[in-house]
Length: 259
Image (cartoon, rainbow, N blue to C red; front, side, top):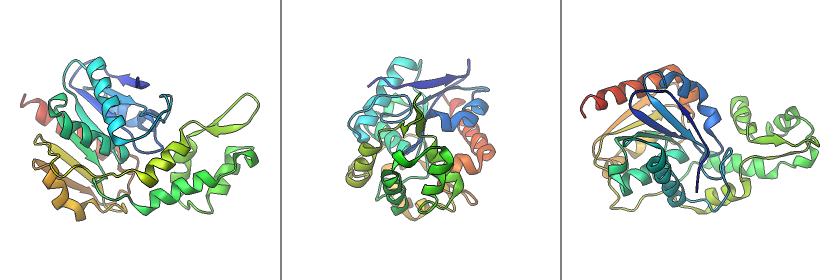
């Protein structure tokens, strides 16, 4: 599948960033803008998100899409970063085709069971009757009954689009993403290993509690550094954007100097 993507920066090492479930390249505009001073940054809309095509959703399908993106748009193996679902796709790329990337950065996800909060969010979106929605404020109020964090609601509502008749619909392929979250495994095969340098950034307030799965992560990524941003939630790049960009820049600079 040919993915829609945003590309920024004119020089420096290449970085590909994969967004999480219900996100898009739009959610990474600040990170892209700041990181592109010294890096060439590509942020795609993963399948069933943003302006990319819709189709069956799985980690394997996202992996193949990202590999195609790298092969056709990168001059060299990029530094591959992924948040949440995007992190799972990045892990699949790294463990299947290590030579395709320069290193791996995973943001607040582990190849294990999903957090229940994500299922509740998707259920709430599926239950929202868009026929009763006349404004984004209506949608926000309706979702507030089950999704209490206003920042999370605003993030999710970026998936709403309005046609010329004033009717709302979902930009993402919500039914297929709901099925994916309910049915698809987020684990890696037991022998899936990426031996290259890996940075895992965890949110200290995230319900994923990545640090509790350090042994599992090291089994798949033996050359791993785990760092916890204590005040950040699951959306680390939104809660601590300055620190996040600085750490990515340090990581890329450090490993780029070794090549």
